[in-house]
Image (cartoon, rainbow, N blue to C red; front, side):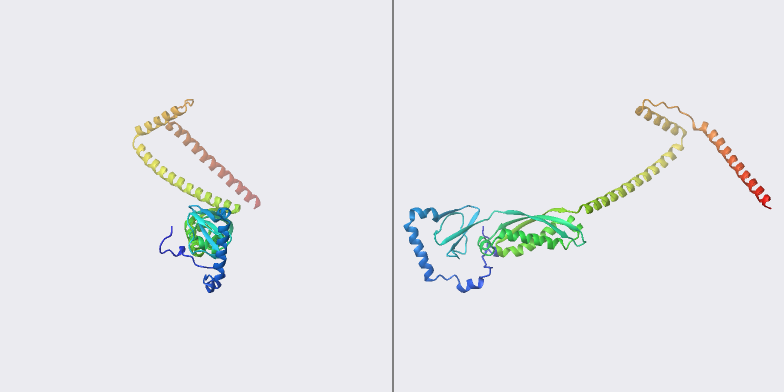
Length: 311
């Protein structure tokens, strides 16, 4: 549907022979009309046969651009329906107005931080002016595809790897703006661009994986140490509470035995008071201290005898 006030729907000649065409100013000389008249006569004389070549059907999603003797028959394209052409002097071309899409081949790009990546994209476009698409470009699909690949390389080359991975929508918007400005004279309107895939070298993938794993390990250690600190603080408070009452300590001891007996039924527990072992530990400690003193005395006597023998 044509939108009023939208310049992209107006046909502007943008090809190499614009000046020559303007000098001619689409003027139709007597020879032009003479050839058209002869063609009409031939079409009428061969009417039973020429009817099959004179009427063409244009689909709802298409527009027909008609040329008569190499010149545009009208500055407006023909809409859907049946159109009449003179087979001898008229040629036409149907232009599809439906939204099309193509894949931009993966481009090997050197980013701003000197990292080589392969990036692909998808471009969605639509013909906004059929006459401009036919007259101003020999193949608007191929031209748009090549332009998209070039724009992708130019824009991604000015971004770092982190920006490419995190700001895909911003990059796609920049690329869309650059394509819209250039493809407008071609009668092509680029609707949307999506960055499809970003492929990194295997060495870079391993390095990034190692970096992420190290960051996760560091975070896990911080969390574990924080938990141990909080648990030790809670245990200290619990021990202070239990130490204030001997009955509480005994009840905690029985609770621990109960939990062990429910989880491991084959385990046999022999409660033994800690006071019985305290005396043995004390005697062993005293004996070790004495033994250490005796060894030091023996070493001192040996050193003194050695010194006397030297004298």
